[in-house]
Image (cartoon, rainbow, N blue to C red; front, side, top):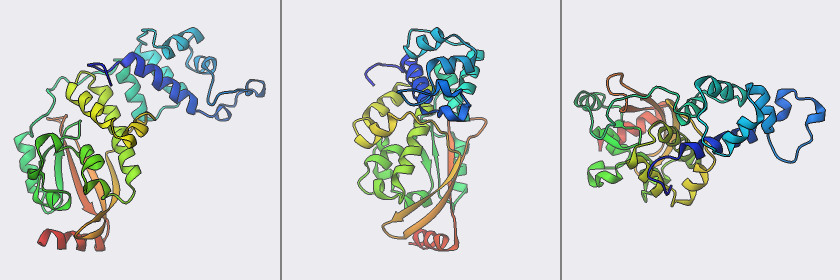
Length: 276
């Protein structure tokens, strides 16, 4: 992360290589005479054949030689590499072929959304932007995680809390999965907002963390709109939570994160925590 903006040409090349190398040739029914190989995954010529482009074109893409594939070629590559929907969107972003939202990036909460965060009590709710900056929260979320008012604004970031906060970093029972999913979302945001210097600086800071650097290098891409996590709360003990992420149509760089207990025992733990 030494440049001022995302080097999408280099990232496109690396992403194509890693996705090609993850594929199992046996899944494509390739002739046995073509299966003797020294490196994992598909060969470049096999990807070229599947995508309907020349081998030279694939070589030039993977060598970051300045090509900008058309939307049709990006679609063909996504199909050839069997990309998941989030990976496909990431590839379109890297190729600059997906329409972009012209709205200003969110650094403060939209007032109606801030009111909604409060109105959704007693559910723990917070409002974030694509960088994971926490823009607004209600009392229940503060009780569940941390008193955000005690943190400087630069530290009100969900990924920073998960990676570096001395207490919250150990909240998650399945810590690596939670961190991995967060990084996969952040990578998608990085491609979608290549000129967001604050995001670039944030990722550069995170890469000083060995765990983040290792998982970032795997280039997983996933935008997770709902899921579950289990935390070990220092006061309330084990709590199993379901979360839902909602994006308002009017303010698409802001997203509501809503937590709910997954079972009666966890709900009882939350009720006791919020009553203190």
